Amino acid sequence: MIPFNKPYIIGNELSYITDAVQCGKISGNGKYTKLCQEFFENAYGFKKCLLTTSCTDALEMAAILLNIVPGDEIIMPAFTFVSTANAFILRGAKIVFVDSKDSNPNIDETKIEALITEKTKAIVVVHYAGIPCNMDYIMNIANTNNLYVIEDAAQAIDSFYNGKALGGIGHMGTYSFHETKNIQCGEGGMLMINDEKFKERAEIIWEKGTNRAAFFRGEIDKYGWVDIGSSFLPSELNAAFLFAQLENLEKIQSKRKQIWNAYYVGLQLLEENGHLQFFNLEEHVSNGHMFYMVCKNLEERKQLIQHLKQHNVHAVFHYQSLHLSNYFADEHDGRTLGNVEKYSNQLVRLPLYYDLTIEEVEKIIKDINAFYEV
Ligand SMILES: *Cc1c(COP(=O)(O)O)cnc(C)c1O
Image (cartoon, rainbow, N blue to C red; front, side):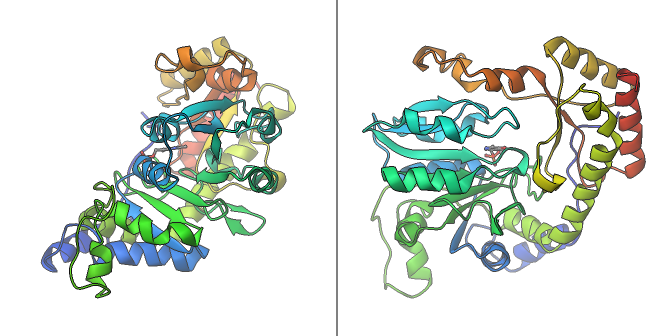
């Protein structure tokens, strides 16, 4: 069976973990955490990065930093992972879900402005599959209405919008290093702080509400409880694994993009014949996070996934429309979000991981083309 995803080791992951143990520090905010954070600050020009135990945690930190209180409204896409919403629900916020675009699953930016009220505090965008949202348009709405913008860039590492790394454009951004993402360490994430005013407090919230980070830098002579916070920082074992992957970022990205391109070229006929809607990407470039297709309807998707399973290929679908979920349906204001339902029922994701061979990709392409008889 060709799995949908497979974690992999590419370089010094295991020797760095050993090194962390031998250095005598495996709790958080040590040598490897700093190396990872500096890597991102240097590579993408992010102002301040804090490694977290997940993207979910980074989103929760963002919600705390924005001082979200019960009744505040947050505008976000309904086609996303639950964490995007949960982070704000935990602070008591009311979530206002927006439809996706026709052309791709990202938030339909033209629908945002009509949903802004006196209570709106922030817009959260998700760069689905690393496809950039229309950030100029969204930042403009936010600035006009005095709102914060948080970028859930969990899938968007090494993806750019007008030359700027995604996650570095809104007031804050978040990455995920979950084992299904391009760069991984099992469970892991990062908060990017792009607005200086959140820098100091972010570090305190990260360190369980204490000013321990400033203490370690020698800026104060004792540390204590100064704010709310939680245990958001990952162990050095995770950071050591992650740093080895970061050292190989170019190699990983080049392989993932090669796979993405092979799918794109090999399945081109299906798009031309109107069987499927592919990525609608200018210049057809991708950060190699995900290759998805959009089937004609739910039944066709079921049959395609079944067909691939019979040929030993594991293809998957997601997300449940959050506005129709068991947890949220009663809270939703009743607006129909047609494109969200379309992607929820019709989108398929194909296997894409570092160790996937081009021969395996060619086999999958052949299986799909055979299904559609092209
Ligand atoms: C993966 C993902 C998350 C969650 O990331 P974790 O690191 O597993 O918490 C959040 N949002 C999106 C869009 C994701 O794809």
